[in-house]
Amino acid sequence: MAVNLSTTRPLAVVTGASRGLGRAIAADLAIDHDVLLGGRDQQALSQTASRCGGRAWPVELTDYDALRAATREILSLDVLVHNAAIWTAGAIADTPTSTWRKIFDVNMFAIVELTRLLLPALRAAGGHVVLINSTVNASAAAGQAAYAASKSALRAFGDALRAEEQVHGVRVTSLQLGRTDTDIQRAVRAAEMGRYEPHRYLQPKDVADTIRAVITAPITAPIFDLVVRPPLPAT
Image (cartoon, rainbow, N blue to C red):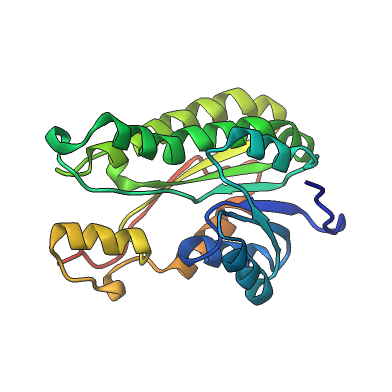
């Protein structure tokens, strides 16, 4: 797939960009970047592009042949934001291996492969990889074993990627978010049988602002890991 975007502005890729958190991140980056809006739904991505700027980049992240084709002509990449993720609840005793595989396919393996494919472009630009993680990676609640494990693996991946790629000028930031006003959080609160109170959660625009602070931090003062929590606890 040819990427015929302006060469006068830096290029960013945001996965899971068709709604919610990904849309807010993409809209903020579009102020001064050309943005590829990654996701599965062409119509939703096109709507986001018309509202926020950027270009729809429909690709199934777990289809590695399609992913390879979609990334082939990205030769220089300034920002890669891994936002796409899935969540499901279930006690370990009730969660089959197929569910674990599905979660890891999206939350871990697709991220590894997309990053691997784009490393030459990131190296060429001295780019920045931002991994949207979760505070559950350090403390898993009952019923969230598979999701929390995938996020723990993602943090380890980020640490290793940073250690390997710093010599190439690629920066890596793991952004560990507390409760955020997203569709996943709605599912979490339903599983917890708790009220959904968005005023108590991080807002997508706040996260987008945080990412901008991360990618514009001085090269001499990089942000490796950042934990961001809402000011009010969930009830």
